[in-house]
Length: 318
Image 1 (tube, one colour):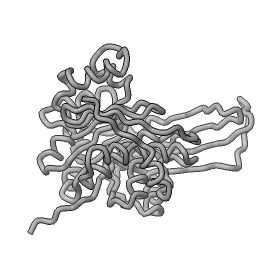
Image 2 (cartoon, one colour):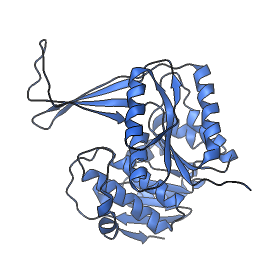
Image 3 (tube, one colour):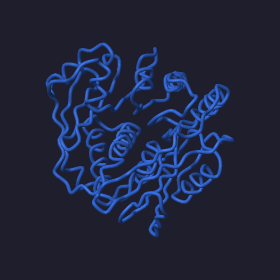
Protein backbone atom coordinates (compact mmCIF):
# COMPACT_ATOMS: atom_id res chain seq x y z
CA UNK A 1 0.00 0.00 0.00
CA UNK A 2 1.42 3.42 -1.06
CA UNK A 3 0.92 6.29 1.36
CA UNK A 4 -0.15 9.50 -0.41
CA UNK A 5 0.50 12.68 1.56
CA UNK A 6 -1.51 15.86 1.03
CA UNK A 7 1.07 18.07 2.73
CA UNK A 8 2.38 21.24 1.09
CA UNK A 9 6.10 22.06 1.20
CA UNK A 10 6.87 25.82 1.19
CA UNK A 11 10.38 26.68 -0.01
CA UNK A 12 12.33 29.78 1.07
CA UNK A 13 15.91 29.65 -0.22
CA UNK A 14 17.17 32.89 1.36
CA UNK A 15 15.23 33.44 4.62
CA UNK A 16 15.97 36.26 7.04
CA UNK A 17 15.15 37.74 10.40
CA UNK A 18 13.11 40.84 9.60
CA UNK A 19 13.84 43.56 12.15
CA UNK A 20 11.69 46.71 12.45
CA UNK A 21 13.00 49.85 14.19
CA UNK A 22 10.34 52.57 14.70
CA UNK A 23 12.23 55.87 15.00
CA UNK A 24 10.80 59.38 15.39
CA UNK A 25 13.86 60.92 13.73
CA UNK A 26 16.97 59.16 12.41
CA UNK A 27 20.06 61.12 13.45
CA UNK A 28 23.16 60.52 11.32
CA UNK A 29 26.63 59.96 12.86
CA UNK A 30 25.33 59.56 16.39
CA UNK A 31 23.45 57.09 18.60
CA UNK A 32 19.77 56.32 17.89
CA UNK A 33 17.92 54.38 20.58
CA UNK A 34 14.83 52.28 19.89
CA UNK A 35 12.58 50.63 22.46
CA UNK A 36 9.83 48.98 20.42
CA UNK A 37 11.68 46.43 18.24
CA UNK A 38 10.00 43.56 16.38
CA UNK A 39 11.89 40.55 15.01
CA UNK A 40 10.15 37.97 12.83
CA UNK A 41 11.17 35.02 10.68
CA UNK A 42 11.06 36.52 7.20
CA UNK A 43 11.03 35.37 3.60
CA UNK A 44 8.32 34.99 0.97
CA UNK A 45 7.99 31.23 1.41
CA UNK A 46 7.63 31.59 5.18
CA UNK A 47 4.75 34.04 4.63
CA UNK A 48 3.18 31.43 2.33
CA UNK A 49 3.61 28.71 4.96
CA UNK A 50 2.11 30.79 7.77
CA UNK A 51 -1.07 31.49 5.80
CA UNK A 52 -1.40 27.84 4.68
CA UNK A 53 -1.05 26.86 8.35
CA UNK A 54 -3.73 29.40 9.34
CA UNK A 55 -6.06 27.71 6.82
CA UNK A 56 -5.43 24.38 8.64
CA UNK A 57 -3.76 22.73 5.66
CA UNK A 58 -0.76 20.47 6.41
CA UNK A 59 2.47 22.35 5.57
CA UNK A 60 6.20 22.19 6.20
CA UNK A 61 9.00 24.66 5.39
CA UNK A 62 12.38 24.17 3.77
CA UNK A 63 15.31 25.94 2.13
CA UNK A 64 18.74 26.67 3.60
CA UNK A 65 19.32 28.04 7.08
CA UNK A 66 22.43 28.67 9.15
CA UNK A 67 24.13 30.18 12.19
CA UNK A 68 22.56 31.84 15.20
CA UNK A 69 20.17 33.76 12.93
CA UNK A 70 19.08 30.44 11.44
CA UNK A 71 18.56 29.06 14.94
CA UNK A 72 16.32 32.03 15.76
CA UNK A 73 14.25 31.50 12.59
CA UNK A 74 13.92 27.79 13.34
CA UNK A 75 12.77 28.53 16.90
CA UNK A 76 10.19 31.07 15.69
CA UNK A 77 8.74 28.65 13.15
CA UNK A 78 8.33 25.95 15.77
CA UNK A 79 6.67 28.41 18.16
CA UNK A 80 3.88 29.08 15.64
CA UNK A 81 3.49 25.37 14.90
CA UNK A 82 5.28 25.19 11.55
CA UNK A 83 7.31 22.08 10.72
CA UNK A 84 10.91 23.09 9.92
CA UNK A 85 12.77 20.91 7.41
CA UNK A 86 15.56 23.23 6.26
CA UNK A 87 19.01 22.12 5.17
CA UNK A 88 21.25 23.55 7.90
CA UNK A 89 24.49 25.15 6.73
CA UNK A 90 27.55 26.53 8.52
CA UNK A 91 27.23 30.06 7.12
CA UNK A 92 25.10 32.68 8.84
CA UNK A 93 21.61 33.49 7.49
CA UNK A 94 20.74 37.15 7.02
CA UNK A 95 19.05 40.05 8.77
CA UNK A 96 16.81 42.53 6.95
CA UNK A 97 16.30 45.83 8.79
CA UNK A 98 13.43 48.26 8.24
CA UNK A 99 13.67 51.71 9.84
CA UNK A 100 10.10 52.98 10.21
CA UNK A 101 9.86 56.78 10.21
CA UNK A 102 7.01 58.72 11.82
CA UNK A 103 5.88 60.19 8.47
CA UNK A 104 5.16 56.73 7.07
CA UNK A 105 8.39 56.45 5.10
CA UNK A 106 10.56 53.35 5.43
CA UNK A 107 14.33 52.91 5.05
CA UNK A 108 15.46 49.32 4.44
CA UNK A 109 18.89 47.78 4.99
CA UNK A 110 18.95 44.32 3.44
CA UNK A 111 21.82 41.89 3.92
CA UNK A 112 22.67 39.75 0.88
CA UNK A 113 22.79 36.54 2.87
CA UNK A 114 25.36 33.75 2.82
CA UNK A 115 27.45 32.95 -0.26
CA UNK A 116 26.99 29.22 -0.86
CA UNK A 117 28.96 26.64 -2.84
CA UNK A 118 28.21 24.24 -5.71
CA UNK A 119 28.58 21.37 -3.23
CA UNK A 120 25.94 22.93 -0.96
CA UNK A 121 23.62 23.25 -3.95
CA UNK A 122 24.03 19.51 -4.59
CA UNK A 123 23.40 18.81 -0.90
CA UNK A 124 20.24 20.89 -0.99
CA UNK A 125 18.97 19.14 -4.13
CA UNK A 126 19.43 15.77 -2.44
CA UNK A 127 17.72 17.08 0.70
CA UNK A 128 14.83 18.48 -1.37
CA UNK A 129 14.43 15.27 -3.36
CA UNK A 130 14.18 13.27 -0.12
CA UNK A 131 11.38 15.56 1.12
CA UNK A 132 9.28 15.06 -2.02
CA UNK A 133 8.06 11.64 -0.93
CA UNK A 134 6.22 13.34 1.96
CA UNK A 135 4.32 16.02 -0.01
CA UNK A 136 1.72 16.53 -2.75
CA UNK A 137 2.54 20.12 -3.72
CA UNK A 138 5.55 22.46 -3.46
CA UNK A 139 5.54 26.27 -3.42
CA UNK A 140 8.81 27.95 -4.41
CA UNK A 141 9.00 31.65 -3.55
CA UNK A 142 11.53 34.45 -3.85
CA UNK A 143 15.17 34.77 -4.72
CA UNK A 144 18.11 32.38 -4.66
CA UNK A 145 21.09 32.70 -2.30
CA UNK A 146 24.45 33.82 -3.65
CA UNK A 147 26.39 30.99 -5.25
CA UNK A 148 23.41 28.89 -6.33
CA UNK A 149 22.79 28.71 -10.11
CA UNK A 150 19.80 30.43 -11.75
CA UNK A 151 18.47 27.07 -12.95
CA UNK A 152 18.07 25.63 -9.44
CA UNK A 153 14.29 26.09 -9.49
CA UNK A 154 14.18 24.32 -12.87
CA UNK A 155 16.11 21.43 -11.30
CA UNK A 156 13.65 21.34 -8.40
CA UNK A 157 10.67 21.34 -10.78
CA UNK A 158 12.22 18.41 -12.69
CA UNK A 159 12.82 16.46 -9.47
CA UNK A 160 9.22 17.10 -8.36
CA UNK A 161 7.85 15.98 -11.74
CA UNK A 162 9.60 12.62 -11.36
CA UNK A 163 7.58 12.05 -8.18
CA UNK A 164 4.31 13.51 -9.56
CA UNK A 165 4.46 16.45 -7.15
CA UNK A 166 2.87 19.71 -8.34
CA UNK A 167 4.90 22.97 -8.15
CA UNK A 168 3.78 26.58 -7.78
CA UNK A 169 6.62 28.97 -8.74
CA UNK A 170 6.58 32.61 -7.58
CA UNK A 171 9.88 34.11 -8.64
CA UNK A 172 11.25 36.69 -11.09
CA UNK A 173 14.17 37.39 -13.39
CA UNK A 174 16.52 34.62 -14.49
CA UNK A 175 15.25 32.03 -12.00
CA UNK A 176 11.66 32.46 -13.27
CA UNK A 177 12.73 32.31 -16.93
CA UNK A 178 14.79 29.16 -16.28
CA UNK A 179 11.98 27.66 -14.20
CA UNK A 180 9.44 27.82 -17.05
CA UNK A 181 11.87 27.01 -19.89
CA UNK A 182 12.69 23.38 -19.06
CA UNK A 183 10.99 20.23 -20.32
CA UNK A 184 9.12 19.98 -17.01
CA UNK A 185 6.94 22.96 -16.13
CA UNK A 186 5.56 24.25 -12.85
CA UNK A 187 1.80 23.77 -12.55
CA UNK A 188 1.36 27.49 -11.81
CA UNK A 189 3.23 30.78 -11.88
CA UNK A 190 2.03 34.06 -10.31
CA UNK A 191 3.74 36.99 -12.06
CA UNK A 192 2.58 40.60 -12.04
CA UNK A 193 2.08 42.62 -15.23
CA UNK A 194 5.64 43.97 -15.14
CA UNK A 195 7.09 40.44 -14.91
CA UNK A 196 4.85 39.31 -17.81
CA UNK A 197 6.19 42.22 -19.87
CA UNK A 198 9.77 41.20 -19.05
CA UNK A 199 9.09 37.60 -20.11
CA UNK A 200 7.68 38.63 -23.51
CA UNK A 201 10.10 41.53 -24.05
CA UNK A 202 7.57 44.34 -24.51
CA UNK A 203 5.17 46.56 -22.59
CA UNK A 204 1.52 45.54 -22.33
CA UNK A 205 -1.06 48.05 -23.59
CA UNK A 206 -4.10 46.91 -21.56
CA UNK A 207 -5.87 43.85 -20.14
CA UNK A 208 -6.98 42.75 -23.61
CA UNK A 209 -3.33 42.76 -24.66
CA UNK A 210 -2.45 40.79 -21.52
CA UNK A 211 -5.14 38.23 -22.34
CA UNK A 212 -3.79 37.80 -25.89
CA UNK A 213 -0.24 37.38 -24.58
CA UNK A 214 -1.28 34.69 -22.09
CA UNK A 215 -3.13 32.72 -24.76
CA UNK A 216 -0.74 33.11 -27.68
CA UNK A 217 2.85 33.65 -26.51
CA UNK A 218 4.73 30.36 -26.71
CA UNK A 219 6.37 30.84 -23.30
CA UNK A 220 2.93 30.49 -21.62
CA UNK A 221 1.21 27.89 -23.82
CA UNK A 222 2.58 24.87 -21.93
CA UNK A 223 1.85 26.35 -18.49
CA UNK A 224 -1.42 25.08 -17.06
CA UNK A 225 -1.99 28.04 -14.68
CA UNK A 226 -0.77 31.64 -15.04
CA UNK A 227 -2.29 33.93 -12.39
CA UNK A 228 -1.46 37.60 -12.96
CA UNK A 229 -2.04 39.78 -9.92
CA UNK A 230 -3.58 43.20 -10.60
CA UNK A 231 -3.46 44.64 -7.07
CA UNK A 232 -6.75 46.30 -6.07
CA UNK A 233 -8.20 45.24 -9.44
CA UNK A 234 -7.99 41.54 -8.56
CA UNK A 235 -6.39 39.18 -11.07
CA UNK A 236 -6.44 37.76 -14.58
CA UNK A 237 -5.83 34.03 -14.82
CA UNK A 238 -5.12 31.62 -17.67
CA UNK A 239 -6.07 28.03 -16.87
CA UNK A 240 -5.43 25.79 -19.85
CA UNK A 241 -6.79 27.86 -22.74
CA UNK A 242 -9.45 29.58 -20.62
CA UNK A 243 -9.19 33.13 -19.26
CA UNK A 244 -10.78 34.17 -15.97
CA UNK A 245 -11.24 37.69 -14.61
CA UNK A 246 -11.28 37.85 -10.81
CA UNK A 247 -12.76 40.95 -9.13
CA UNK A 248 -12.43 41.87 -5.47
CA UNK A 249 -14.27 44.35 -3.24
CA UNK A 250 -12.77 47.59 -1.95
CA UNK A 251 -11.11 46.95 1.42
CA UNK A 252 -9.32 48.89 4.15
CA UNK A 253 -5.62 48.30 3.47
CA UNK A 254 -3.46 48.22 6.62
CA UNK A 255 -0.30 46.52 5.32
CA UNK A 256 -0.03 45.29 1.70
CA UNK A 257 3.36 43.61 2.27
CA UNK A 258 3.05 39.85 1.90
CA UNK A 259 -0.30 39.93 0.07
CA UNK A 260 1.26 38.24 -2.98
CA UNK A 261 2.64 35.48 -0.76
CA UNK A 262 -0.76 35.10 0.89
CA UNK A 263 -2.31 34.80 -2.57
CA UNK A 264 0.13 31.98 -3.36
CA UNK A 265 -0.92 30.30 -0.11
CA UNK A 266 -4.57 30.45 -1.19
CA UNK A 267 -3.73 29.03 -4.62
CA UNK A 268 -1.77 26.20 -3.02
CA UNK A 269 -4.53 25.31 -0.58
CA UNK A 270 -7.26 25.41 -3.24
CA UNK A 271 -5.28 23.26 -5.68
CA UNK A 272 -4.17 20.86 -2.93
CA UNK A 273 -7.82 20.36 -1.96
CA UNK A 274 -8.77 19.70 -5.62
CA UNK A 275 -11.23 22.60 -5.62
CA UNK A 276 -12.88 23.93 -8.79
CA UNK A 277 -11.07 26.65 -10.77
CA UNK A 278 -13.37 29.48 -9.53
CA UNK A 279 -12.99 28.28 -5.92
CA UNK A 280 -9.19 28.15 -6.20
CA UNK A 281 -9.12 31.72 -7.58
CA UNK A 282 -11.58 33.02 -4.98
CA UNK A 283 -9.58 31.37 -2.17
CA UNK A 284 -6.39 33.03 -3.44
CA UNK A 285 -7.92 36.49 -3.71
CA UNK A 286 -9.49 36.12 -0.27
CA UNK A 287 -6.22 35.23 1.45
CA UNK A 288 -4.44 38.07 -0.38
CA UNK A 289 -7.08 40.56 0.78
CA UNK A 290 -7.12 39.31 4.37
CA UNK A 291 -3.35 39.76 4.61
CA UNK A 292 -3.60 43.43 3.56
CA UNK A 293 -6.12 44.00 6.36
CA UNK A 294 -3.64 42.89 9.05
CA UNK A 295 -0.65 44.74 10.47
CA UNK A 296 1.44 41.55 10.59
CA UNK A 297 2.96 40.30 7.31
CA UNK A 298 1.98 36.81 6.17
CA UNK A 299 -1.01 36.70 8.49
CA UNK A 300 -4.78 36.42 8.04
CA UNK A 301 -7.81 36.27 10.29
CA UNK A 302 -9.46 32.95 9.30
CA UNK A 303 -12.73 33.99 10.97
CA UNK A 304 -13.21 36.57 8.17
CA UNK A 305 -12.52 34.10 5.34
CA UNK A 306 -16.11 33.14 4.42
CA UNK A 307 -17.33 36.75 4.49
CA UNK A 308 -14.71 37.99 2.02
CA UNK A 309 -14.70 34.79 -0.08
CA UNK A 310 -18.35 35.52 -0.89
CA UNK A 311 -17.42 39.05 -2.05
CA UNK A 312 -15.01 37.81 -4.73
CA UNK A 313 -16.40 37.22 -8.22
CA UNK A 314 -14.95 35.12 -11.03
CA UNK A 315 -15.96 35.59 -14.68
CA UNK A 316 -14.88 33.33 -17.54
CA UNK A 317 -13.96 35.54 -20.50
CA UNK A 318 -13.66 33.02 -23.33
